[in-house]
Amino acid sequence: MPFRFFIILSLVLLAEYYSFVVVRAALRALPNPWRIGLFTLYLLGTLAAWAGVIFFRKIDWAHFPHYVRNIYIAFSLGLTVGKVLVLAVMLVDDLRRLVLYVINLFFTGGTKTAAIVEAPAANGISRSVFLSRLALLIGGTALGGFLYGITNRYNYHVKRVKLVLDKLPAGFKGLKIVQISDIHSGSFDNHEAVANGVRKIMAEQPDLILFTGDLVNNRAEEMEPYKALFASLKAPLGVYSTLGNHDYGDYVEWPSEQAKQDNLEKLKAIHAAMGWRLLMNEHVLLSKGSEKIALIGIVNWSAKPQFPMHGDLAKAYTGLEQEPDLVKILLSHDPSHWDAQVVPDFPEIDLMLAGHTHGMQFGIEIPGFKWSPVEYVYKKWAGLYQTGSQYLYVNRGYGFLGYPGRLGILPEITVLELV
Image (tube, rainbow, N blue to C red; front, top):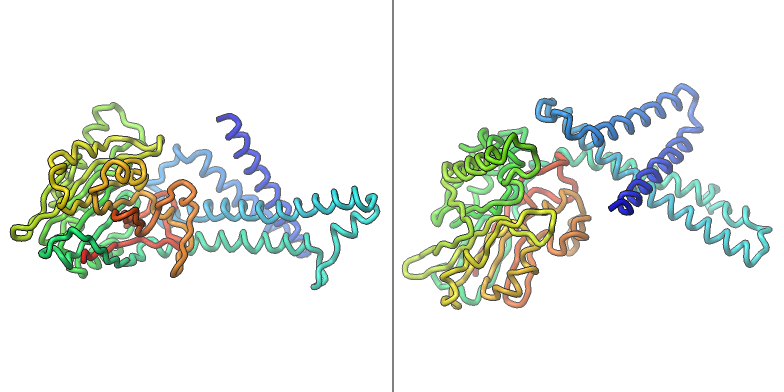
C-alpha cells in the first residue's frame, strides 16, 4: 500500500509539473498583463480543484446550488484528466529525448546531441514545442469535454436488443422487457428531466420492468421526491427489483449500526410503496396461461473485495434444480458475479441482467467499437455478452454518481425482446 501511494503521488506531482511547464510556455509570448492574469487563473483553478479533493468529505455538497456544484466537480475532474493526458504526451517527448541522448552518447561521441534532440520539424518548430502544444490542446479538450458532459446527464438513450432463447415457451415469444439500473436518486437535480426518462420507459409498453440495483446513493430519503414518479412505472407482468452496493448505505457515516439498518428497511419499504417487488435472494415464477419462466433476484454479490457480498444465489435458486427446461432470468447488480459464479456453477441460467459500472460515465462508443477506462477493472462493463448459451446484459445506468454528467457513455434504458 505505501508503494502504491508513492507511485500515485509521484504521477500526480509529475502531472502538475508538466502542466505547469506547458501552460507557462504557452503564455510566454503574451503581453505581461494577459500572461500574469491567465497564469493566475490557472493556479487558482488548480488550488480550487485540490481543495475539493482534500476537503471532499468535509464539504456539505447537498447545500451547494446544483449548477455551482456540477460545474465545480466537472471542472475539477476535467482539469485532473487533462493534466494526466499532458503528462502522457510530455513523458513521450522526454523518453524520446532520453533515447536520442543515449544513442548520441554511445554512437556519435556526444557531439550532435543538441542537434538531434532539438531538430526543427517541417513546420519550423521543434518536436518538443509541437508536443508541448499538442499536450496543451489535448488537456484543454479534456477539460472542455467534461464540462460539456454535464449537458448529457439526462440524455436517456434506448438500447434495443433481441435475444434468442431456445427454451422460451411459445406464449412468451416477443416478451418485451425494460431494464433500468443505477438510478442514484440522490444525484438528481431536475425532476422534469427524470420524468422524461420515465415517460420514455412507458412509451415502450413493456410487458415486464426490471431494476438491477442502486436506487439511492446512500440514504433512503433521497428517493422521497421521486417516489411517486417511479411508482408510475407499470407493466402487465409487474415491476421487479433488487439491491445494489449503494443501497446498503456503506459510503456515509451513521450514528449507529441500528440507524444504518433502519435506513435499509426504509428503502425496502419504498420499493414496496412504489409497487416494485423487491427480490431478496429468492425467485418467482411468471406465468402466461399454463407456461412459466423463472425470475431470480439476489442482493449485491461482487467478486471485487471492495464491494459488499450479501447475495446468495444458491438460496435464490432453491426449487429450480428440477426445472432444467425452465427459462431463468437472473437480476444481479454487479457483473463480476457472471464469471465468478453464474457461468461455472449455474449453467442453466439463461440470462443475467446487471448494472453497477455506469460505463464509468466516460468513454467512446461508436458502432462496432466501445471503450472506457472501466474495462480495466470490469471485463464485462456495458452491453451484451455471451458465454455458450448463456447471456449477460450490463446496463450503462439510468442515473449518475460523482461526476454529474456523461461523456461518451450515455444514460440507458434497455429494451430486451425475447424471441
